[in-house]
Amino acid sequence: MSLEQQYRQRFAGSAVLAERAYQRFPGGATHDGRYADPFPLFMERANGPYKWDVDDNRMIDYWCGHGALLLGHGHPAIVAAITQQAPVATHLGASHRLELEWADLIVELIPAAERVRFTASGSEATTLALRIARAATGKNTLIRFAGHFHGWHDALAPGADPDDPNRGVLPSTLDSLIILPTDLDQVAATLATRNDIAAVILEPTGASYGSIPLPADFLVGLRELTHRYGVIMIADEVVTGFRVTPGGACARAGVLPDLVCLAKIVAGGLPGGALAGRAELLDLLAHDECGPRGRIRQQGTFNANPLSAAAGIAMLRAVATGEPGAVAARRGTMLVQMLNELFRSYCLQGWTAFGDGSIFHLFVDPTTDLVPGEIPRNLPLATLKRGGDPRLLRLLRMALHLNGVDLMRGRSGFVSAVHSEEDIHATIAAMAAAIELVMREI
Ligand SMILES: Cc1ncc(COP(=O)(O)O)c(C=O)c1O
Image (cartoon, rainbow, N blue to C red):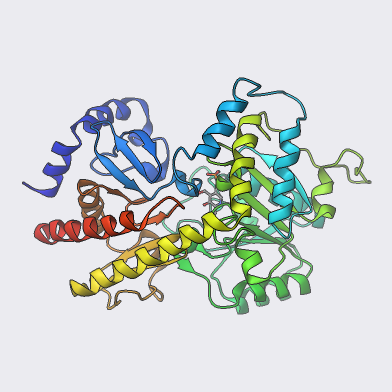
């Protein structure tokens, strides 16, 4: 039986639901990243590091809520916070105590956070950052880096995916963007020759949560350049915030950006986001800071929603101890090391695992001469973003599912603080079985 036939047989319940999904959802999925060929798995429930599909197959989960669930699924502190808050109020349409406590924790943890404005998502946080940067500087152009992802909205979607033809995006929006490689010389040359740049935005560990890591000292160099030319530095810490260290990736590098975009972990696994940063910039939103040019508007029905606030507080209290991030990072490092040992033992050329603590990536393309453990560089951006050979990755994804492991988009993942050493060993055993299946197929 082919791998795909085995997949269709084992995940028969998902196949049935996928048929219905194709009638309801464009492409059969509710998020581009959740699309899968021949069909995605439909999940039913989750606990700790595991989730179960509609056929009751257990998966070790490395999506972990797209990176939001640092404490795994159903952590008692988060569940208690939500269940206590739900009967009290799910929406007050008003200021409330929890939003204050939530913001206090953000300010305590993120060094650049002097003020906070809550949003409903990471995309909203990056949108607001841009508006503030443009208003504060009176300039319109933005530098963003090729491959870095900052949400799906018009202003920043172009440039995230080199294969994206940007259909539906206004030409004037495209004109307001300068898309650069992560090369400080090119940033310097651009800043030296243009006086219309409002801000530079980046993912502070590199494109797609570090799947294309930044060159050494890039963050420090970028901060120096942006200071020199009076340009606002926006760190998109939607993934890295509270994860790579409690203070995020910029804190780890000793860099103080002007604005920091937050989401995912900040809301404890519920919807939510925040923009934090220099008071002087965030205060452009304040009602008493109009000045001659007027204030900036920002609304949002679900800003600082009490349920998200309760979950976010429980999460950030745990983050503040330093413990969950450290445990998750140890397990992530162990996973990457063991994956590379496994690839070596199978003499797999062009297969490599790499990462940053609790974040890991696979790159699989036997036509390259990459050795296990090597970070792929000097390949086309589209190949790097895709994680290698799409045909092989498709087979690997099915084979891993058949062996009880769900990687994010089939080629990366977030390790939580509740993934145990046994889970890591089980993942390695699953990967070995998956490699055998894939090898039989090609
Ligand atoms: C770095 C980064 N920025 C922004 C976003 C957008 O966040 P959201 O999906 O909450 O809109 C994401 C989402 O994955 C992200 O990874």
